Length: 472
Ligand SMILES: *Cc1c(COP(=O)(O)O)cnc(C)c1O
Image (cartoon, protein in one colour):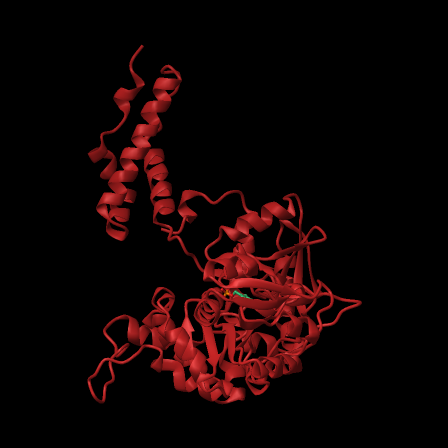
């Protein structure tokens, strides 16, 4: 029997295939060579394992396999996603999209040097926090401000700097866990502060806090129980009362508000999220919140409050480990600038413009997309339905605002399969499965992506993409 491996081309022969030559130009030589070696190796192993029973694929087929391998290898770790889940702050999908102004700012700073820690007037060394300090003071009404990597970092730093080695009083109703292994008692332990729980799960009174204060007390902490709600027989203590108690006992009151919106969002729907300014007005010593939740900026943790405490946090050794980079500051600076005019913020910050989009507008967009989907062979139906968009990102699950979605029912494919194929599209399209239908909630889809939805569904409905469709 002739050895079938004799007909296997050499690495150089296969590389000479016109399709792969084109790839060498588009991608790079060494990646394509690696692909060629890999595919030839696979064939050799296969032939040996099947004891020469198989024929070696022809060069065209081998080239296709290499091309597919290269396409997969070249796919970046992060790919853009069209978020049609209706969840506005989807942590899995990167939370808040940035405003154009923030992108311009990153672009201007990223490609060169910048005055991150230099005062341009004097030429002297300065602090990176100064970049956004004035803006943060302006939009929150606070005396001082600083920025760290995220709100978890802000919490850790506040506890360590203000109450390291001392007790921090927290209501039992606020000992929360947020997704991704963030548990308040654990963060507390890491910070070196000692948890002093008071009250019960559903009821905590001001006397519970008062009775817990002693020589060992370092701070009082209030946490917004972002992602859950205690309903029924409940009682909690307002920030103002805690501030009064803190003042009497010379203890700082830390208010972790989580999402922290800079504007009141209740005008967009039944949304009850804390507003940063209100906490400052109520007298909180330190207010902590995320930059990439309702603020609609880059990932970071923002701390605003009294000069004395912020200074202590800035000087703490952990501050260096938790600091933000220049790109985050560039994006945050540009985002905060937009907040100096609320109408402008609503128009230009994607999260706020999503929230403020009218149902008529969504309906109108759905009416353009839906008939085209309904006409696809592989779908049994596509119809416009009423939907509920969610804030997400650790906000109370019940906080929804009305929206419009297009609901798809595939003909032969399962809904899960269709959803999975769309997730692997270019760009990826994420919908939400509900009652055996795939929903595209249009509130979270920027209108510029509307025209991509139908082609993506059409592609996903076909059998698995051939190598010609792998994007190279
Ligand atoms: C989301 C959240 C955090 C964590 O914020 P990250 O920016 O994700 O680190 C902490 N506390 C509360 C109350 C939150 O809602």
